[in-house]
Length: 194
Ligand code: G4P
Ligand code: NA
Ligand code: NA
Image (cartoon, rainbow, N blue to C red; front, side, top):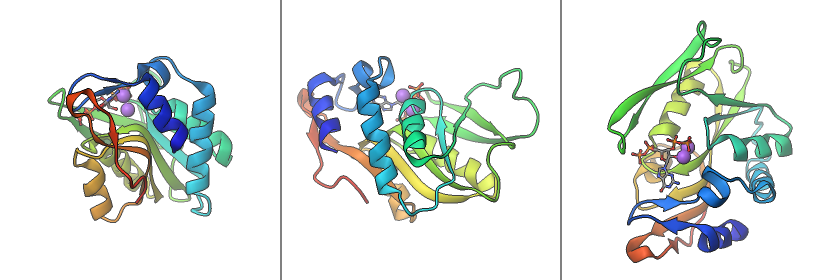
């Protein structure tokens, strides 16, 4: 997605050889116009997949997911990382291991909002090692729902998540794939999608 790549070039900051900061439009401040275009792009790519629900993870997955949900006319569910007072009973949960934090966290959704009648599109802001995506896929499986695949705003192609998911047969559509962040340079890979 050309507009997204331009935005990453203009406003992204390379923090290290492996971390890209995009607080200016995605992870802290949010650019609603860009988010709307991102939502439309996901809607176009997954048109005809029979999506009935979008599933994401709080917090940075919510903005692109809501825009995709608006464009596709389906509700958006975000998995919670902490159990809230009101989210106590009847949960589907999955462990998500974070390599950067070296800890496992439980993510959960209420059983009320995803069920066997659903075809779920998973959306997230970043794809690195793929642990969050795997956790969200487990929630879909536990709900007995069908999976339409995964939509990612920015994939770090030099980390193994995307490759492993695709190898296992999951449809992964990434709007921008970064091949390298070495020496402060952002290099995109030519292939954007599956
Ligand atoms: P890891 O597997 O690569 O170790 O990282 P992990 O999934 O634990 O990701 C930790 C957080 O960092 C996630 O956000 C993830 O989206 C984000 N992340 C991973 N790589 C990058 C990157 O290069 N740039 C940016 N900006 N974020 C990255 P989170 O903790 O779930 O936070 P939230 O923003 O969704 O609230
Ligand atoms: Na995220
Ligand atoms: Na994040």
